[in-house]
Amino acid sequence: MRYTSGFVAAALLGAAVAAPVAQWGDWESSSSGSDGASPSATVSPPLGPPAPLKSGNPFSFPLSNGFPNLNAAELNATEEQAHGIEPNGGAPTLKPDDLTSFRLIAFNELFEVAFFTDLLFNLTENVAGFTIADSTTRQMVINAITAIQAQEELHADNANKILAANGQAPIQPCQYVFPSSTLDEALAFAKTFTDVVMGTLQDVQFHLATNGDDGPVPIIGSVIGQEGEQTGFFRYFGGLVPSELPFLTRSSREFAFSVLNQAVVVKGSCPNSNLIDLPVFLPLTINTSPIAAEDQTLSFSVTVDKSSPPAGLSIVYINSQSVPIVENITNAVLSNGVATFDAFFPYSEYLLNGLTIVALTNSTGPFTDAEDVAKATIAGPGLIEIN
Ligand SMILES: *[C@@H]1O[C@H](CO)[C@@H](O)[C@H](O)[C@H]1NC(C)=O
Ligand SMILES: *[C@@H]1O[C@H](CO)[C@@H](O)[C@H](O)[C@H]1NC(C)=O
Ligand SMILES: *[C@@H]1O[C@H](CO)[C@@H](O)[C@H](O)[C@H]1NC(C)=O
Ligand SMILES: *[C@@H]1O[C@H](CO)[C@@H](O)[C@H](O)[C@H]1NC(C)=O
Image 1 (cartoon, protein in one colour):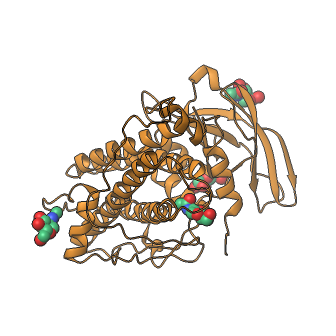
Image 2: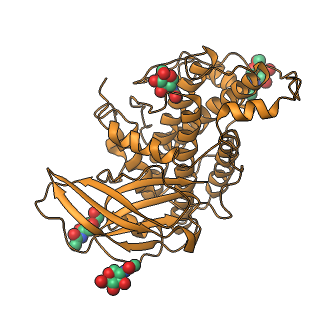
Image 3: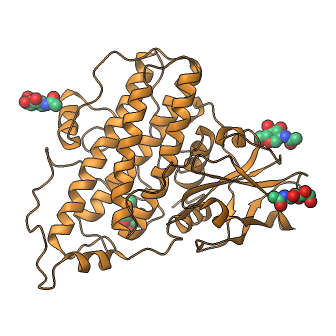
């Protein structure tokens, strides 16, 4: 298996599971009554025809229903599974910068389809690590992931249709690797990448508004809420409160494109991701794990090709809708092409819960927002999830 970004995926997964969470089994046992009877004994099977099951790690397309190319009957079946249909108004005409956003959305949603298709396979086939003893709970989870899998197909299909309506080539799927080998890990990982997506769609809305392409802003808003419903489910089943922060963490298109390429895309497997005009930064590894909900100094490393690191490096934390937090790096050591260094993590001053995006920048700022940070980023994003 060509797991080229294995260490990054492991770091990402480490971040995703860093916070202490109740284990799946705890939820299961606490939710059944003392007599062992479940509070809701019957759960209907998922809506629509059977979901297109497929597995693989690395995972490759197409699915058994033809996705990413759905004919009318296959689209109909997917909409039934998804509980709804795609937007049916006229497609918006977009400026080049917003076409970049929709290419990135398609690129990300194709990965999400791969992930949830594989997760649904593992659940349905009772793959080791993905079994759920209580049949009611198992059916609830299968129903949820069946709907999410189909909903992600429609998100990807819709983004590519908007590109096609603008005379642009659709983004084609790559091959993907998944770092999760248990259900708890898979849901924690899904929570983390969905948090990044929700932050990135804020940036997409900002670009649409700035470029005068306000038409799709409501559609993007509807997807942010939809993805938030998903993370509420992932969080609750991980023993966390469903709603993460009063104001979700902002991200930028550059960070989303970078982390997908670093952590889940099989290098060299993307037919046309070169059409996406965004940078892929160097991976930034967070060595400290787990990361507790407290003030502390974190250790980081990055692979460098220079004998001495450039001057003026800072670590920047992006959380919530706060102004990015800039910290000095200390204890920098360069050994065998890997720079290792420390930076303070000011948890308590800013209540750095939920997703925090970390970047190594060549500027001390000040920075106004995530995209401003991305313009000075050398390596990142590191992803920290607390509570
Ligand atoms: C799917 O096809 C069935 C049978 O033709 C039809 O009744 C249903 O309305 C279609 N659903 C959608 C969402 O198009
Ligand atoms: C499904 O299980 C396989 C085998 O353990 C694992 O490699 C893969 O990552 C799992 N898929 C997901 C989405 O967690
Ligand atoms: C970073 O270092 C500079 C120079 O020593 C100092 O002035 C500044 O206060 C430091 N910043 C932080 C956030 O500690
Ligand atoms: C800082 O990094 C940005 C983004 O990678 C790059 O465009 C810029 O040239 C760098 N500036 C310096 C002074 O190295």
